[in-house]
Amino acid sequence: MTTIPTLAARARPKVHSGVCQGTLGELFQGPFRRGDRSEIAIVSLPVDRFSWVYFTEDDGVRTGGDRANGAGADLAAAGRSKSQRAVEFFLDHFGLRLPPGRWDFHTELAVGAGMASSTADVVATLRCLFRLFDLAYDQRLVRAALAGIERADSVFLDEFALYLSGRHEVVHHFGDHVGLYTCYTTEDGSVDTEDLGDELLAHYGRHAAAYEDCLGELVAAFRVGDVGALGRSSTRSAELGQLVVPKRHFDEVRANQRTFLADGIFVAHTGSIIGYLFRERPDRSRMDDLSAFFRELGQQCHFARGGWRDV
Image (tube, rainbow, N blue to C red; front, side, top):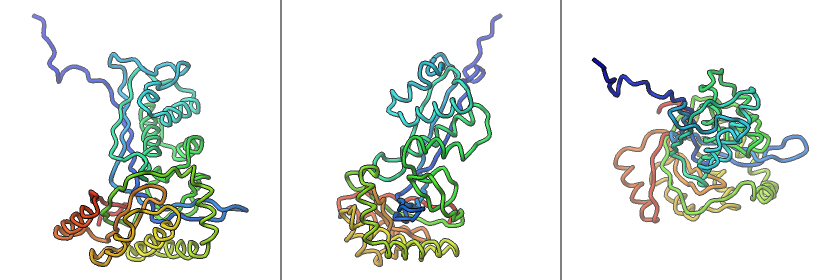
């Protein structure tokens, strides 16, 4: 008598995954002097929104198994050319070849809004590869890969940091001891940081003293974990950024900050996100009021936990 295996008993294809969270813009974006030049420095606001990358080993679909024929050609076909470059960098570095299999993706990060979507995709892809080949995760290699691909956010770090996005250099580690809540919206449109680089640096030069004071306050706030002070510094950075990359609803959001008892305002300085920071989760009534406020502006708001420590 022949026994037919049940679905549960059949061997399932082996799946490897990599996950990376995105950001809600920045708590700070401004100048930082490095040697004889000014660099664009950022302190990203990490958020509980993620990108996932999966590699399923051969289940009858053979894609990207031959490095010579373009490792992960299906990545480019899926519009993930930066992830494909990360795969090629990884394989070349270790002298490896992809086994037969396929890539799949899922993301909660909007493209072009300031959520670090492309950087998160690259980092998630590399994390998936480390797991696929059972290699110890190497943050230095991730940073080296990003350096060859794009100006990046610090989403590969599990902490807040002052990061020089063009040099891929961490200037200050702020740790993971700060948590907060956010209410935010995404306006229409997006900005390309690469195209805006010269204009940003010129703006920074005109307001160098204000940015220096703002960053000093932010660093001091992180040292003691003061969310209220972080909020004030973030608001100041957003106000300075408004002079070069304005948000359409900034004035209304700023005018109502006290009404909603928000600790500060944050923006995606070269994106389209704007929102409020809270040291504690808004209660149900305030969430309703915030939702109505943003709806009156013609926007849909969202709530999300930011930072690292639960609050």
